[in-house]
Length: 83
Length: 486
Image (tube, rainbow over all chains, first blue to last red; front, side, top):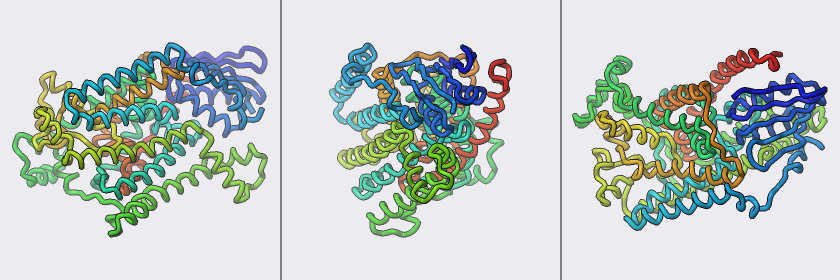
C-alpha cells in the first residue's frame, strides 16, 4: 500500500490513496492540490467514505471545484479542478 | 460549474437499484439475523427487551453515524489539520437537538442521567483521549461504525480501547506509587469490603479516594431551578448546551469559514445579512453530517426515554436487578449492579469486554471498584450497552453494504501501530475522564452537566497537540516521496 501521486500530462494529475483511512486521504489531497497550479485537474482515487465528506468541505472552502464524483461504491473516483 | 452546484454531478440510483445488488442482499440478511436474534432473546425471557432497546438503538446510531460519516475525532482533527469545520458543526447540531429531547425526557421523569463529579481528571482525561484519537483515525463511536464498514484497523482500535481500559482499571503493584497518600487514606475511610482491596491499584485509589470526594451538578440544580420545565429547558438545555453550542458555531464561522465564503461569493466586506447567509451555508455545507446530527439528537433522547420507561415498568434502577431476577447472578457486581447508563455511551462496555476476556483467561478482574463494585463483568451476551456497540457495528455495516462502501481493509504495519497505541491512549483517557467524547461530553452537556465542556476543551487541546505531531510525521513521510516534496 503506497500513495501514488503522478503528473499524467500538462495540467493533469492523479492521486491514488486507496487503502488509506482518516486523516491520510484528505491530508494527501490537500498537499497534492498545493503542489498543483491553478486550473489543473486532479483525479483522486480513494476508498475511505468519511474522507470524502471532508474533501468536499475542503474544496468548497478553498475554492476548488469538485466537478465529477462517482458514487457507485468504493473506490471513489473524483475529479477536482484547482481554483 | 461552480463549487456550490457540484452536487448536481452525483449520479443518484433509485432505492430499488441500491437494494438489488449483492450488498443490499447482505444488508437485508444482517437485518433478518438481528431480528431472529431478538426473537430468540425474547423467547428465552421477555425481560430481555431491556437489552434489545440498547441493541436496536445501537443499530439506529450505526445507520446515522455511517450516513453522516459522523466521527467526533474529525471534528477536532479536520478543523486543525485541513481547516474543515463540517464535523464540528454536525456535532454541535446533535448537541442542540439532544439537549432539547433530553429536556423533554427529564420533564417526563424518565431521565437516566447523573452528573459527573467535577475535578481536574476531566481535563486530563480529555487531553489524553484527544491526543490518542489523532492517531487512530476515529473516536470511540467512529471506530465502531468504521469497523462496520469493514475497516480492520478500526476494529484494532476497539480491541485496544477494550483491553487498555480493563488493564488500567485493575492494575496494582507499581501503580500504587503514582497515587498520592491522601487518596489511599480517603479510600480507606470509605469502609469498602475487603475483597475490593481499594487501596491497591492506582485506579481504585483514584476512584474511591479522589473522585468519590467530588461533587457534580446540573445547571438546573446549581441555579436552584425548582420548576422542572424551567430547569430542564432553560437551565439544562438552553444555558448548558444551546448557548455554548451557538457561540462555538459562530466562532467556527469567523475563524474557519467566513473568509472562504466571502471570497467565493466575491464579497469585499460581509454585511450582517451576508454573514447570516454564510452561517447557513456552513451549517448546510455537509447535509449528510447535519442530518445525522439531527437524527442522533432525536434518537439519543428517545433511547433515554425508552430505557427510563422500562425501568419504571420493571421497578428497577439498574439492569443488574433484572439480570438477577432472571437468574444471571454471576454477571453482576457485589452490589447487584452492571454498567447501565440508559443512554448512548461507548467506552465502559468495551472495558467490560476486555475485562471479561481477561477474567476467562484466569486474571483476577473483580477485586476492584470498577468491575467488582460498580459495573460487574457480564458475559458479552448479557451486556446491554455492549449490545448497543454491536448494534452500531451492524447498523453501519448494513448501510455501508447498501451504499456499496463496505470493504475489508487490512491495516499496514504503520496503521496498525497507530491504532493500537492510539487506542491505548484513548482507553486511559476515557477512564481518567470517566467517559469518551460521547459519555463525558455529548451526554453530559446535553443534560445540563457543564463538565462536558471541560472534557471537550481538554480533547481539543490534546487533539491540537496530536495534530501538530501527526503533521510533523506526515511532512517527514511526504518528503521521502519525491512527488510530494514541495
